Image (cartoon, rainbow, N blue to C red; front, top):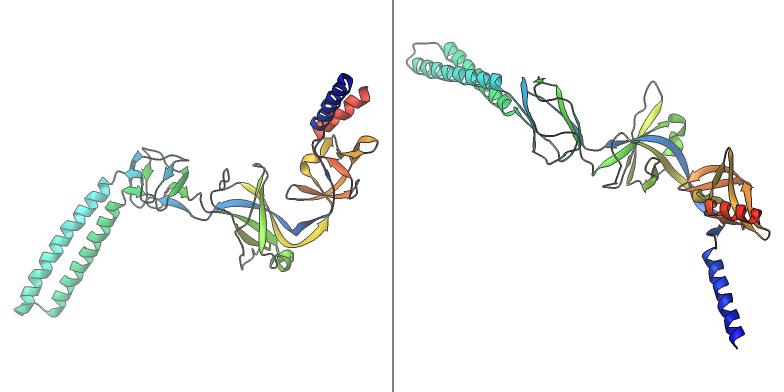
Length: 327
């Protein structure tokens, strides 16, 4: 009785060890993959603004730097607008003089001491002075540079102590919650492109992908390159995705049944691309010829057929195969 019990325990231990050492695998079978147009793209911000100076003066206060989060209306910089303040004061003085002259001329006109033309001239001078004073007051308010949108500071174009002048770029801010990618499509593919209603965007550096929220083909083409721009909307708040990043877009135009193998199962030995296949004789390293990449699955053109079992962990499979060869 004791021997039977011991044999059962040993058998169970061997069975559990075999399950523990089992390699993850998958039986290959044709599956539906998305067909479409592949294009390289660049990430852009849907809402982005470059704030420029509107008055002349020295930058005396810088409150933000690249990467800082801001809200709409937050003060980004302050410009020493003493010159603008003096101009506003001078405009107010001219306005006071023009207003007094207009009032005197109106009284004189009522007494027929001056002509209607003289009164009209005083009225025109008064209106011009009023407009000049209003313009000078508005310019004085531009000494504080505020953010037009909420988001992140992409770049600061000026430093404290530098001179600002009307039109000079100071800060670029963008909204990270609304991003898109823009791709260029040759005109010979536009007919097929118009059938695409959705797309998938891949970010190779991040190892991530996302489904597009919208696809918009712009109704113009570049005269020199003969390509059209396509804007692809991205889901909100994609972590790690920033404007200027490279992306690959697949505009989906249909589906087809193809035999594919997972990218994780592929082993690279120099210039050889292969997978480990489980057979009745044991593990085999099988060279493959691969096609397109469909969201992490590579199309198999040659080297393996449907129904064969592929190991999903090539590192462990190589160790197992080497251990068996050394026995």
